[in-house]
Image (cartoon, rainbow, N blue to C red; front, side, top):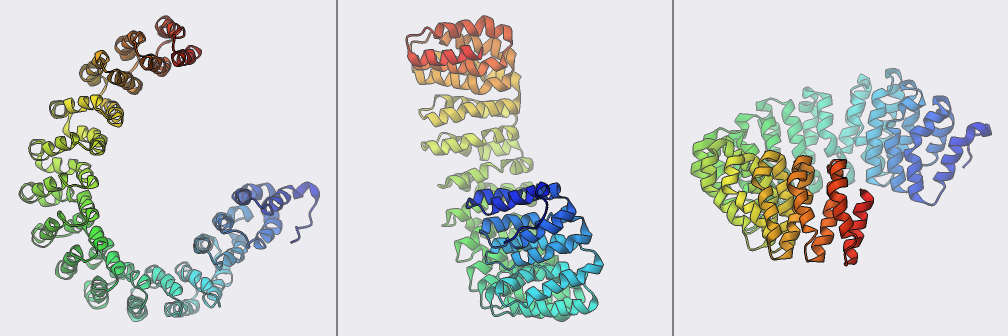
Amino acid sequence: MTTPAVQDDSLHPIAILIDELKNEDIQLRLNSIRRLSSIAKALGPERTRAELLPYLADSVDDEDEVLLALSEELGNFVEYIGGPEFAAKLVPILESLATVEETMVRDKAVESLCRVAEQLPTEQFGEHFVDRVKRLAAGDWFTARTSACGLFSVSYTRASEENKKELRQLFYQLAKDETPMVRRAAASNLGGFAKQIGKDLVKAEEVQVFHALAQDEQDSVRLLAVENCVANGTLLSQDENSQLVLPVIRACCQDKSWRVRYMVADKFCELCESMGPVITKNELMPSFVKLLKDTEAEVRTVAASKVAGVCSLLPEDLSLRLVLPSIKDLVTDPSQHVRASLASVIMNLAPIFGREHTIDHLLELFLTLLKDDFPEVRLNIISKLDAVNKVIGIELLSQSLLPAIVELAEDRQWRVRLAIIEYIPLLATQLGVEFFDDKLGGLCMSWLGDSVYSIREAGTNNLKKLTEVFGVEWAQNTIIPKVLSLYTHPNYLYRMTTLSAITVLAPVVGSDVISNSMLPLVVKMAQDAVPNIRFNVAKTVQTLIPLLETSVVQTRVKPCLAKLFEDSDRDVRYYAGQGLHQC
């Protein structure tokens, strides 16, 4: 490979790039590609076109990671080569990248080609872009034809009438390609292409291709028909949807492949919105109920996650009559993943069903899920309590669900207790300070004395988060006295918890609280008989120093550390020395 013949004083950026791209270290080559914009700026637009682009055109034979980075960089390169009038010079390089074997590289090259195409002047568009798309579509290798599928939408809008007709025919041919990967690419881009060609041509031409792809022998192609149902549904009228799109949706709901049914369940809300309320109510709801009862747990899982979204599109009475019975079955589904999926959305049904129906039908289901054996199910319920609180009020919530939460917070499995602690600040936000102090305040303090270290640690972090929710004054009056009282406990592990809590709380309570309440106790604990306590005092003091005034550090902190520096224990002396250095 020969480098452009230029003077030595101007060769520097290209020479460095060539050396780095020839290096065996792939990370070095990657870094070089990511610096292309800087190199182009140094060269200027004219020399970038004359020297850098030809070299890059000869460099599309590298590791996939390097080619991926190159494909991404070139999509933003128009400004560096002189603007839109020269954008066509990037198309050949990206065309080559769009034909490589690695899918990620091709996809990124197609994405960059679309960006470049948007900046091409109209007079250059046909020759320099549309013709290239045609060439890719007729390529011998499936990689070229696959990439072409992603370029039709951006080509069609600016093509001449003659080219538009040819582009449509080429796209329809690719949809019938013998290679499944090409048909899949065509199916993936069919919805976007339909929006460009317009409603009349969709009805006259595209819908035949749509039906063919929906009946493809490969389920990876058929499942993409679901997204195309959404795209076509938004373009067509209700009667046209009933005739042209609804049969495909029905077929997908009953498809032998669970992956296709999974896709229907995943896109069900979008399908309902595109089909309209009448078709949704009369035709789609029975299919949704079947998906909630599907034989495959994966399908039930994704369908369960859509119940709130689907019910929000239906009249309340229809949701209660059709969907609620299936929801009750899912609460006791054999699959923990199905129950967890339902638990993540079932609370959102409360605003949809209203207060009366929530109390009559949903509270019992919430309670069942709160007592589920699978922790994720319980946590998904707890994380959405605010939705129910707004509908039924805190009093009823506390009577029905809070006892179950308290029971979980005292669970004999420490991992369950740990998981509950993480949601306490969220509950505090929802419950308010008075209710929290009455119902959960004592529980939060009990975690500081838990037999498991991880619970004690999480308990101290929980106090910090609660202080951020309720404020410093609340912390000073409610939790800090209780935390500091632990220092008298005969078990040194509890006394260690006091130091841990001070370390965690100090950054959020302010210097006054630290000086008046925390620091005197820390200095007092420096005389503890247990060396572990004394060196943790030294470590705690180090965290307090940046939060205190200089005068306090010099008069109260430094003497304490100086005394610890003379301690008989080596570890105590070490941490005290660190503290003195910090002073």
